[in-house]
Amino acid sequence: MPEAYIVAARRTAGGRRNGRLSGWHPADLGAAVIDALIADSGVDPAKIDDVIIGCVTQMGEQTFAFGRNVVLASSLPESVPAVTIDRQCGSSQQALHFAAQAVMSGVQDLVIAGGVESMSRVPMGSTTTLAQSGGIGHIPFSDAIQKRFGVETFSQFTGAQMVADKYGFTREEHDRYALESHRRAAAATEAGAFDAEILPLPVTTKEGEQVMHAQDEGIRGDSTLESIGSVKLLSENGTLSAATASQICDGASGVLVASEAAVKAYGLTPLARITGMAVTAGDPVIMLEEPINATRRVLERAGLTLDDIDLFEVNEAFASIPMAWLKALGADPAKVNVNGGAIALGHPLGATGTKLVATLVHALRAQGKRRGLLTMCEGGGIANATLIEAM
Image 1 (tube, rainbow, N blue to C red):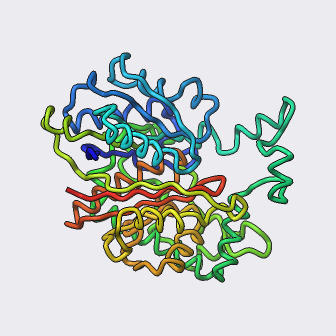
Image 2: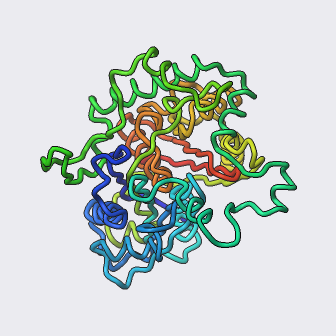
């Protein structure tokens, strides 16, 4: 089967809610990343076959063929098509899978996969809020769905706590995990570990100062167990708080996927090779446990074990998710989210998949390591898993 290579991988630094990136239109955020991918690779923009953009909250500024608007805001010629996809938090990871599948099938040679989410300008859940204000229905779950699963609605917050309860995690364990995420992210930033992947963007601060936004805004290097432990719990009898959940975040990310023929024809330098992909689905009520099954599936199909993987990125939607993944699979915690995760760095929903791919690719190369695995929990009880090999 033909190979699919990642020849460029970039992301913006995360912006806090109503923070430094909130002044950027989401289409312009995505366009800036696309332009960086073109500049990094040196490829002729007209040679791009397609652009696949992940985005979860497709309304307002993130609707009306949003992927196409990202292209139109970029330096790509208008002849380059685009599409927007939604696989919830795994949207841009699935965009990468679609791009790789197109290249590996021989149908296309150069595809940009990415994601955008401006959670300041298009708030999470705003599509449901709009539905509640008018129309026939107010929730996306029909009577048949509610009857089948015995619930009126599906909640990621409920699911995260169900996972915590299933695996017996205490609040202190969640708090300690969150503290370590901030510590790792702060250390990685200080060491310049993100420099190769972050695209600095010009922003205006609240004080009116023009600066370059080049560091993730949500990292709290001064966090303590006491400060994290003082945050109110999400539910009265629960063990999770806002401090042990992923941060609301503005951001964009993307990768350029190329065929072997394109690599040779245009003199491109591969950063990594995509060696395995899987998507699985399970219980939509507990919802967020599925990365465990997706990891098993992708490793089995590739003929690999956990010991064969050098670095893992397991999205920190809530602390209980990577903690359950670690407990269920017995992976080495020292290999997981080595530069921190979404608890510290933010989770810009549709952009997080290729954001973490960029982090994984550059971390493997910087540390002289070979294999990486990314997996992510997603709304509806779905999960993607991706294997890459640094070059």
